[in-house]
Length: 395
Image 1 (cartoon, rainbow, N blue to C red):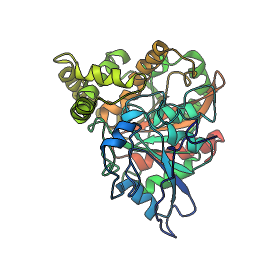
Image 2 (cartoon, helix red, strand yellow):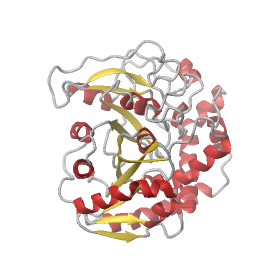
Image 3 (cartoon, helix red, strand yellow):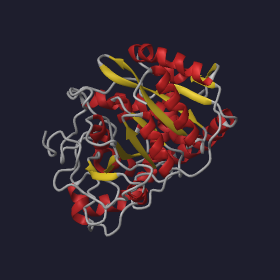
Image 4 (tube, rainbow, N blue to C red):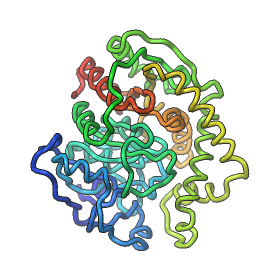
């Protein structure tokens, strides 16, 4: 499959980088989403006008360097939704990457290319970024392990921003042990120790389509056995639609503050949905973002109180499998809203979240998420590996 068609790599010459001969990741290959700089190679951010108006970087992003210095070999940069502002994985300029586990469905975005190349076996792991679900959702859609780390845990120096107080580095792997090994390189020390009990988030389970909830029920039982004990909780008393709206408004304000000057000055051509989202961010109703920020502060305090003792929330990563490639714009928007209502749980509170490829619904992969307090990333990766082993998944 040609890179410019439905492959996951950015079309053209593959980016490369020298790497250490030895290290914790020696023998592994990795790819990096095309919002991470690699010296001597363009950072297109998924859009030709961005590439045209920005110089080729002379230095390499910190996270990319860390993986290479640990012995992993960079095999290329991967496609992204334009300016990382989308959730399906569509890119009309570079070609929408294939979802190797469900070729008639979207791969998920915005880290679509990184998910695609790992699912196809073209890389052992791949860097993405996650603001509103852009690692967790493609991980679920493509049947992969994926992590959104605690906000601020992994350096984004040398990476293009979207909404900085939500942006995180994240990564994919086909094996839980590889996801963990990458975390040992990228994450700060600490945060180890036991986690538990397990908390089933009722709003997220009720939000999931019945086939998805049914497909993940067995995995949830096994996770409960690993952790020891499970309780039902309802931490989103306002409802997921209210959480979605608060996230949408606060993120939009940041996206326009971060990229609005460039959008206004350049007048870039955008593919479906992206220009509309920036226009909505520009025209955000007065007070909407302030209300979203206020909601976030209270919600974060609530979640930190719930998880501060080591508890782990569990729920479907995405409420539905990946939309089909012929889904209408209205159908895609509906999926976006019900999905971000769930992904905003971790996003609004700065939590770490790992998606495990734990089931299949309607013939497509679906993931189970485990979510812990900020700073417990390493312990969460270790827990996800134990759950994967219990489920008989690639670990």
